[in-house]
Image 1 (cartoon, rainbow, N blue to C red):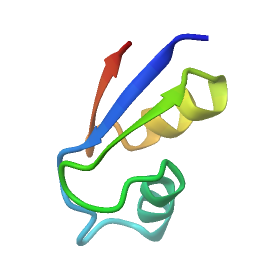
Image 2 (image 1 turned 60 degrees about the vertical axis):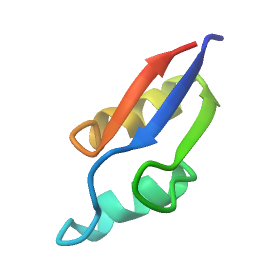
Image 3 (image 1 turned 30 degrees about the vertical axis):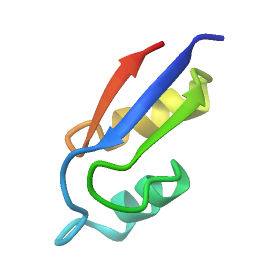
Length: 59
């Protein structure tokens, strides 16, 4: 599996509980926080649900 670097670029203020929970499940805590994950279907699905809040780079 390829690795993906996920960076939160927008705030979760005034977002739905579901989107906040997805951001938290990805391991993102605050603005400009970056985490690296394996590119599994589960992670890619989570990224797709909050793609307007994050920036994704392939590693």
